[in-house]
Length: 317
Image (cartoon, rainbow, N blue to C red; front, side, top):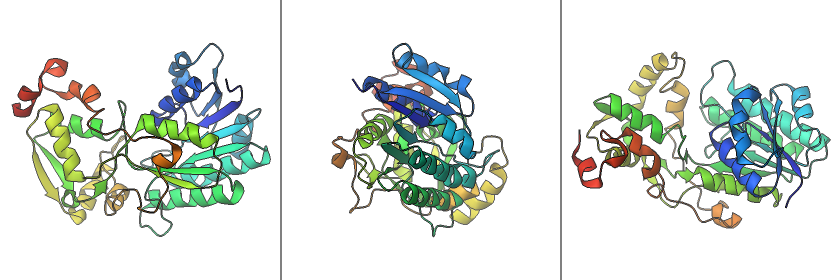
């Protein structure tokens, strides 16, 4: 039983809830650092009494970060945003990462795991990718032994990819193929990412691991997979990048944007594991396939719900 305390920044989000469960099972005591602690109380049943606690923290505030790390022996940074609403990419993904790494080093922590993203690139025209790269650089400078994990798109019951497009297929007669749907992805299961984070806490080898599943898909492949699994026939309409950017200029004004101009820029580059990168296998993890997991949660988007059988799903509109 590991009696050490780990502070997890962004622990109440999608990846966070699975990471907290994995940490609890591994015996860690867990402090979830979040801007809204009350929103994370649903995590408490994932551990034993007193194993999971909460602290209010804003990663853009160095003093707040230092207080969240008080008493901890390790830290995990899961913070990140997909669009700017009230918080900027720079505040969260660049300055926030720097604040966490610097405070972890100053406190003498034994381990830091920083979750970034495949596509982090200081030369990118995407602000998301640039600030992810800046965050990685800040971590390397302040905490050289830290493990950096770069996942491809992450899937699981609460994900923002398969659920979003399955919901769009339920509501609309067509789905957009941004850039013709040729962008390649290597979706990785959230449970595998959580296990990688736990494994990385004991590594601290200063390496960067790229996390992807066993199969590479084009964007079009993934939309077709969603349609098959939900039993819906929908037109897939190619949307050139220029037109997608124009549409995104308006869509990004919504409270919860379907698409932003920065996301269109990201879609111009494949999101797959490099052939030379260390990955899940190096952490002792066998990747889980998309097909093995998504039926367990995409059933709710079928016209007949959970009890629709496979043959009828293939033909329903």
